[in-house]
Image (cartoon, rainbow, N blue to C red; front, side, top):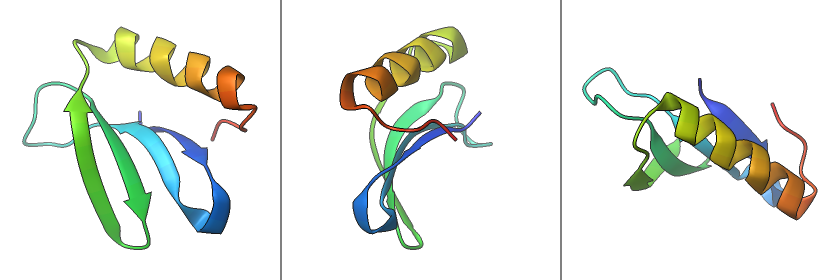
Length: 62
């Protein structure tokens, strides 16, 4: 982890893990700022969500 989709203007949406949190978070990264929008139940759920999101929007997975 993290699983990241690259958008326009180098913005990124991804499932990130942070050392001070137990669960992966859904985040948007713009420049050097990461905004957390929510948390996943576990790592497997985050992986499945990111795969489905990539397919839905036709984005490349990093």
